[in-house]
Image (cartoon, rainbow, N blue to C red; front, side, top):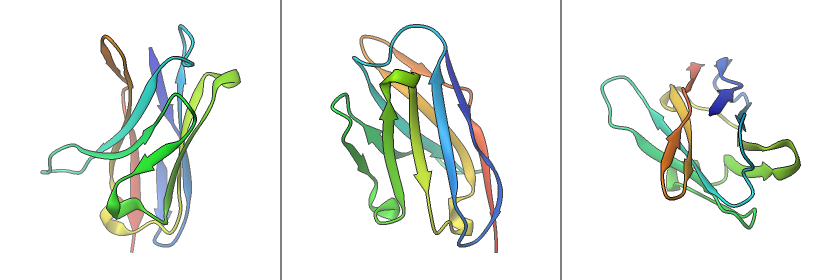
Length: 112
């Protein structure tokens, strides 16, 4: 089970750090993705955090967002800086393996 947290209301230019913690099992062997879905829009990929610890982010997030993981804490992170109103969405983490598990999402709202 994945628990996403860290969302909230922030002004444009602000920062948030999202966390995704696995309550069962170790995250060590899995890749994790962060997706987001804004109202009326399709869910889109934001970042991939690889088993190695490296991460890739979508073009719209480059230079602003960073994905990371702490295997000892069984947690994956999405650090978001210089947030923009268009970043407003529900953010989801997911674990990719033989099966895909999704967390429940955390709301991020960026005011202008």
